[in-house]
Length: 317
Image 1 (cartoon, rainbow, N blue to C red):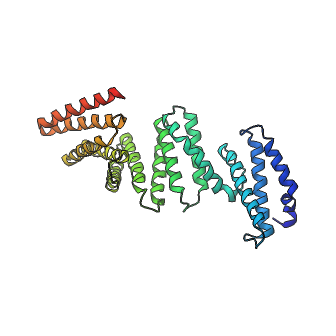
Image 2 (cartoon, one colour):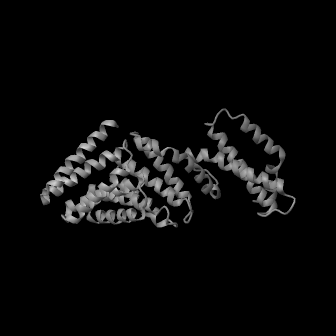
Image 3 (cartoon, helix red, strand yellow):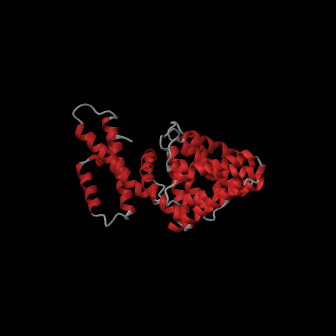
């Protein structure tokens, strides 16, 4: 880009016309105008760097502020284009635009968990794929975006998607765990990958997936402290994987471990949480299985108590 090519775009008149165009926007859904304005302010930002260099000297504070404003407006305007699937975007700006788009995409995740609209879920998966593609390796938010993509792919699989969707979710969860640079958030990444592997084991019966799930969920449980809802979810996930391994291999210690984890998890769920019903029900099933193996009447009685508590909890939901 040469100075004589960009000088007109830096003129005050060009900026006034762009602002007038923005004021005339008929609504937030006018993507064409947003797209043009985004490119205009991006070119102004680049032109300022060409004219002044990346580090303007003293006395250029006003120009620097305008440059920051151009960059901010470019990102905001082109985010709408990114969300709409537009490919014609400034490549150097993609990481910033994608990061801005991720804020909007994240707001849709709770709705997607309840959605039965395959087209909407598939659209969300494509959006998160683009966000991940725009985040360079080493970007601090890349593990977060990979996790979001994995969650959407898992939702897609649960709503009648292909087995490949679950495989892709596992790949994204695994990559997110590998890309994680700090330990504090590690239990969540371990849990996501462990649960996805357990889901694939239930579909395929692949023992390596079950062993991987047990190892990951056990590590997540060891790394999760306190008595909150998240620890309850980790413990029930581990209990389910241990019980599945007991059903596969018959090791009594796996069944004992599952019962212990269910018992620890139940009081951590709020009284009106669906997870409490599920954990109590599974606890009853596991206790009855141990009664069938060992014949201890205390396990049979405890199973009946757990099922009764599950029914009572379900009645108030």
